[in-house]
Amino acid sequence: MKTKMLILGVVVAAISTFMISRAEAQENPLPAVKIISTDRTDEVKLIFGYDSRIPVTVMFSNDKGIFFQDKIKGENLDKGFSKRYQLSPTPGNDVWVEVTSHELSVIYRMSVAKNGKWLAQLEKTTYHYPVVALN
Image: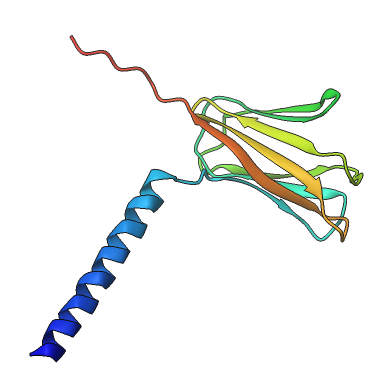
């Protein structure tokens, strides 16, 4: 009888742990916008995984302000896009990348690693949900 109760307790604990971790994952969804470093030290790749009919804006800025802005046409973005950008890495100088579309805005902070490649860290995600009014 003790063995059955012990097994039942372990099963209940495992199910509870699974349900809690699943609930936390649904609360904090990560956006389908990623910035990854490539094989080259002066290049990063932006992956935008959303459909968009409206242009997507990509802005690169540092502590002195915006130094590059790219507006990607939204006509053929049925499955998103990926694009490479050239950046000259300077240690100690962080770069912020803001990707803005009709549905969301994402800000990444990029810094240079010891090997000279870029590291991107998600700073902020803002979803632009449409306003719905009830009569």
